[in-house]
Length: 203
Image (cartoon, rainbow, N blue to C red; front, side, top):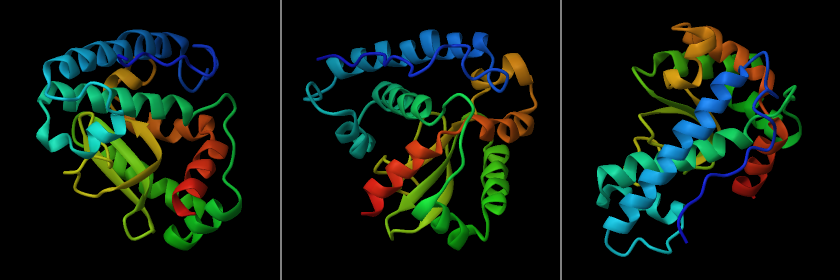
């Protein structure tokens, strides 16, 4: 079956005022849809990719075409991103909160380091909180539509949280003020979903 655009778990205006409805509409219905369409094209042109999960494709992405890499990453990253947010946001708790404190000193220190990584990502890309291959929390960033699941990622691991720092994610509201967007984004993070991912990855 070809890959399809997932439905958002909330309305296009649900993350106002942090992320405006116009940005969400374009981001989901135009940008993400384009990644899905081009990924399906790339899969049909590739060797033996039909029927494989996106995670399996990403795990061997170094052997794939640029079309599959860019659009496969774009589809996975955005599907993950939509689920990372919710109206009104939330706060981390339980084992995840303890792990954040242990790894970064405090929740505020973690947010500062995450934001710094997002600001420091040159050009378009993503900033991530992952559970790395040693079982530790780590902050990393990737260019373009790359992610830590890819076999040639500089830092591999299981993504728990990710923020899109492509300009299309924030430019209509924040213009070139990426640090302002990164600071505001915490208001809509769905920490219950992040904790669910952490529990699944950490065991």
